[in-house]
Length: 361
Image 1 (tube, rainbow, N blue to C red):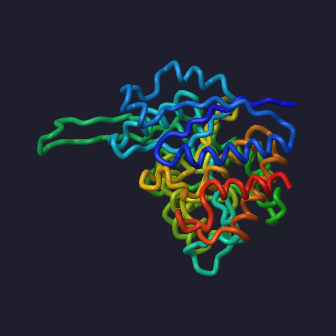
Image 2 (image 1 turned 90 degrees about the vertical axis):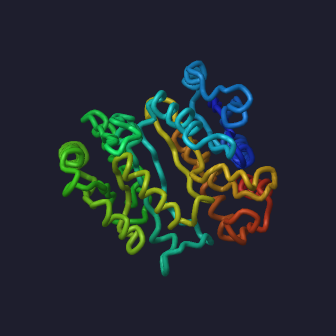
Image 3 (image 1 turned 180 degrees about the horizontal axis):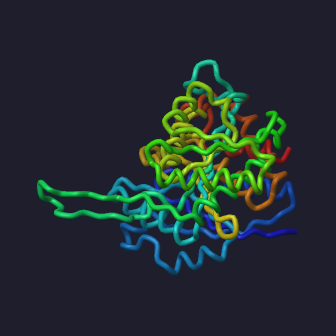
């Protein structure tokens, strides 16, 4: 029986509540599909920072490297200035663990409302691969004459060929394994590059050249498309059914995945993974810590459960992951009155129970 070591970090606000339900479903899946999970809890977040002044020591990063994956609840505390925890925990882990892929499924589950008229689960069914280590997020830049009328701020987007190629290869591999043809819901597997080659003529020239060179030579079975990012935003609303797997840089990926999350029903169902294909990956719900709902038992845990489902898939527990996804779809289609906090018709714990019970049927 295979055993996985999982680091569990509930974080702030309602993060520990939704993480508890994800762990509940994970334990149910482990029992059903005959694998073991060893869990170690970490309390990094706003309360620890307020108590000790410590955000995330380097020793913790080294400890995380010993795990198979990290399951994260949420980071963000109302008493801590924005950016301190996010940079000190999330970005630090992403860079230190070289989690160079941010994987964001955009899939509308049955029974979940979308603001897009006349679109349903059949149309809203694609995945965004966001490069997670480069672009303007590297911190390259600075100020000159700060605080004066002549102040200049520079923040430089940076990409290396290595960063681009490894992201593209991951994306092609993902399209080959999980694209619409592979899942039996489309005629072909397609990878679309989202860029801005008409303005960002250096960075996205590099991306586009590498995209076609690698695709033509190594992935001739994958159809290749190119979309400008502004057009992509329009089509995500007007014709989401055009998309299969999208790949893009860090900044554009940050923007379009939040748009995608709203089209799939909001932050209560959106999940993502920060992935190092050869190392330790971290999975999290996309919504924030929602501190105003802390301790009330009304927050929706499905995004955290879906993040855990992505974790199982990345660990190779494909059957268990599929069963959890089917269980979530059953619950959204047949049980929940709404995805909103306090309006689901069930408590946070009860929603976790419903998914766990359906997982082991």
